[in-house]
Length: 69
Image (cartoon, rainbow, N blue to C red; front, side, top):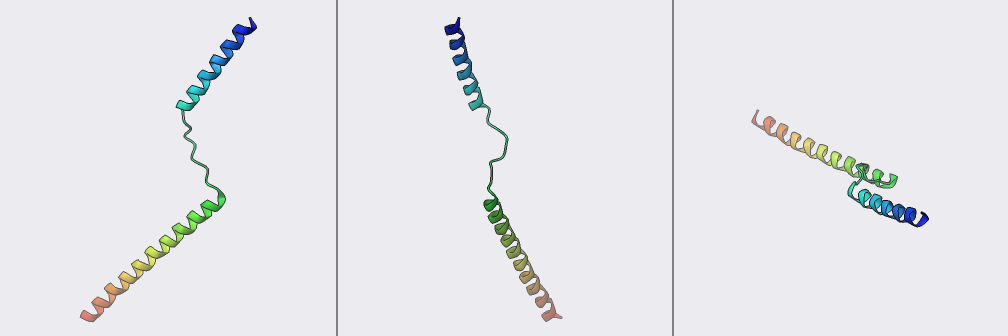
């Protein structure tokens, strides 16, 4: 009886491992605190660059209208 039980246990264990490989987790990948801080700084720098380019293009448009007036 023990041998039969052991065989069944090992087969169930293998089957469980195979099923676990098929079903991947939907949990997002872990991002360390330092990496999150770097990403936030990069996003902030990109946002500031967009704002500064928008201000520059806005100033050029305003100066063009003033010259015509």
